Amino acid sequence: MKVAIVGGGPAGMMAAIKASSDNQNEVFLFEKNEKLGKKLFITGKGRCNVTNACDIFLFKNYIMRNQKFLLSSLSKFSNKDLMKFLEMNNCPIKIERGLRVFPKSDKSFAITDCFKKVMKENGVKVLLNSEVIDIICDENTKAFKDTKEEKRASYTVKAIQYKNLKNNKISKIEIDKIIVATGGISYKSTGSTGDGYKFAKKFDIRINDLLPVLVPMGVNGDFTELNGLLLKNIGAKFFSSDKLLYESFGDIEFYKYGITGPIILSASSYLFDKDNLLIKNINDNEFNLKDKLKLLIDLKPALSHKQLDERLIREIEKLKGSDSVDLLLIKLLPKKMVSFFRKNIFKDENFTISKIDKTYRKKILDLLKNFEIEIVSSRGFNEAIVTRGGVDCNELNPKNMECKKVKGLYFAGEVVDVDCLTGGFNITVAASMGYVAGSKEV
Image (spheres, rainbow, N blue to C red):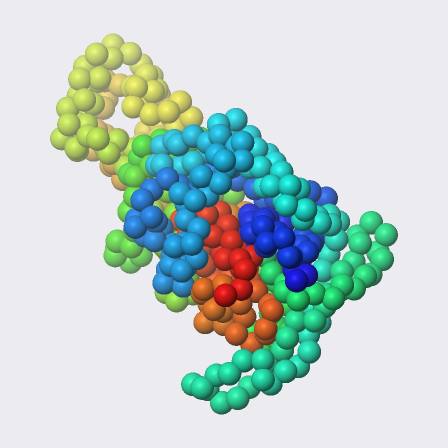
């Protein structure tokens, strides 16, 4: 059997490895980039958080959409299986905070090198700088029997056309099975430009609305001086019209366009969805929110208001002979926040510590325990880690990822409408779908 895989990310590479483990298959992997796993190189800040070591029964809690659809593939290739695969193929791994799994080398290329090594051993023909431009099928009304619905036109995969991007030469290969693992449209610089959706639309395969998730947020106000500030171990609560929507504990980072970090990325997966009508006016760079959100940050979650006030009183007493309030604030805040807080609490630049009374202590406490930021937008696909939406799961057989309308056509990875929280879960489900899509037919 001739098997073609489109896309060299974790889903595509795992599909190629599994398909090529059957010696009767001739496997081709088409990647339009100059190298495989380009998106993997930038995950986990260049270290590649490849999976999560949590119990498989807990794993499903981190899948945001279509959990049941993934149960079949995860039962055949789970996070533990991925960890075992890496270890068995000379890619040592380690487990860090939150059970995140990284290569011991802290280098993303250790993961891609592992996949490439196994594919080479299995005889996979890797064609880089090669873009699949068309899937050719025979129309076949008897390809599938569906007793629940009226007879509908179906197709059978016949061939693919691809272009060599170096010389623009177009070639055609007859094929028995094709696995589309082209990713979503996040981080377009890595080659995720929505090719898989184009193939799906050709055969009237339903595509669910696309949204950026695991994405930074745009804020109202000038936080330029906080650019680059990382707040660790803080509490965060998100409100809409005083209704609490989401709360978490962890890290937040300020950057040029707003705020990011684990708390923000995970919150975006819970909050930014067309189902709850939070987003409108979509474009590639930014999504404006229909309803603005209020984020309250607790900079001192380990201390109650009373405990924090008692600490403030002690610190003020120690510094009573000093002039600059900065001496007090620097004991309570990261250095980058001192100027920002001073301007928001003490309007008079000559304000001294001796003038801090109960009213000013309350202002300091309010900012420390309820530092308010107005969220006005979601950043777009160019900054999103994952694309939500894509090929509707109802169009696929969950046991093998085959399209119900096209015999021999499979979809796997981010191109499918499945997304997870941060922590290694998205790479795992992509590899799991690739594994079952590449498996021998039963």
